[in-house]
Length: 310
Image (cartoon, rainbow, N blue to C red; front, side):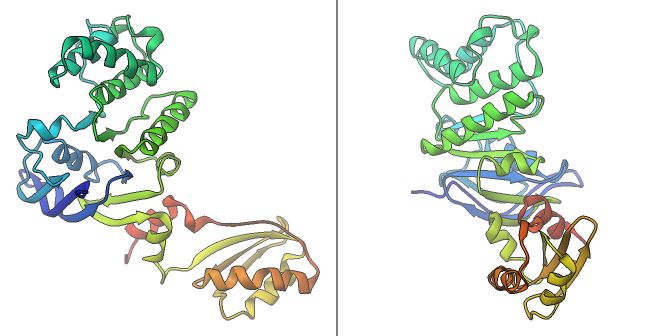
């Protein structure tokens, strides 16, 4: 199977402004989150993937093919843009069916596929209303339906949850997970890390037009081995546990908050720390109520990657 995406020294310039900067990577088929703050280069990379922009330098291949001026390849890609681009006098059904036919589907097939796609994204109830009457969440669902209607192999979703209510966000996150489970490849862009983390464990972190890291969150975290983990322990008698932990070679430092009944441990050896912690707690006869590592979140990883000195 061809790689989902391959970039070699890919650069896109807008005059003197850099959109993507000497980017090289390879992604396997599957569901991937494209993460980074606004202005990081996510939308530029997406437009290169979907054949909307021509690279200034370097090469990009999707399923082994150049996406620029390649209608055959583009029929295998479904694109949900961040910004609306509707003919608002059309109904949702007319809009999706028109795009299905433009992709090459016969009218009868396009009509059936449109009904299926709109139903799947939860837009069946209002598919016959003009798009001009839709809320932001309704428009997002309609854009997602048009990206699905021609049954693409790859879905490229640029901020697909923007403007949706909490229920809608949950439903769309579930749908993206289902599509991945069905064998489709999905590249979903967002600056809201916990939402993408709920959809996939594979990530591409981009900042300043460059890829900072790629992989699942644990693999990315292992790239940062020299940076200590911070682990919160809520327990009885935190000062006693802190004294015992401070003597362990796997522990770099301990801070206690007796009023809150907790302590914070910094360690570069989390496996060793988690192995010794139960033994120390049992020997001291104290109970541990809560245990968690803030540094396993994507937010913490991203902060480390873009922080000073990284």
